[in-house]
Length: 301
Image (cartoon, rainbow, N blue to C red; front, side, top):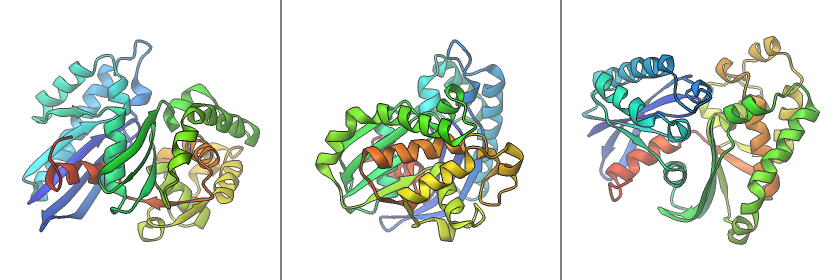
């Protein structure tokens, strides 16, 4: 069976089209658009009408692409930004009216679970998923999650609160992020899984920056090991860099140029607090997790 999952994140709209055969998930195509729903939350916490209209158009475009690819079923879910929105019900209804798709809004715990299942291969692992609005940390084995937490720190969220124009300001954001992680530190250190995996644009961008390769060279990004020293060096090199120079870097996806340092600051904070000398980058995440749960496991999110 060919299926598709569309995920509305805080920073990006993404879709995975995959075949489910013989108890396995076979990835076919990925699609991405920089939507920035979190940045469109107004002072009352509502998703603006302009963003609602844009999201409806973009999701409908993705839905049509999925159908053209032969998908028999198309699923739609959302994470941190929509979870935070005061008008999430109106947003969901607008999407249903425009696309015919019912929106499933993930809790923070569910978001962590989906990312973990999507990115790990059954071995005992730890996972960090840095998004635009939140960061999920989980430890588990197979489909069993031993501990998971969703923290209100994401690259877009921190970018709105703490401008960064120097290495000193970047390290100040690292300290802010460490304070948010610190209450969870001992519980995760007590488990100490043998390996850690990182998912999300911060990780793939960091892998490209460290290797000095184009950001879309996925075959060299997936599975790359980021060291704590290389992450700190990338953050401190980018922090004072003017936007025009960032945009000229082939390793940096243009839509991430303004938030990349904040994401890397969160990554460094996680590595410091959780005592991680290195972490492996994965291109798989909650889209894979969503489809695995729906079609390979119990079917209940």
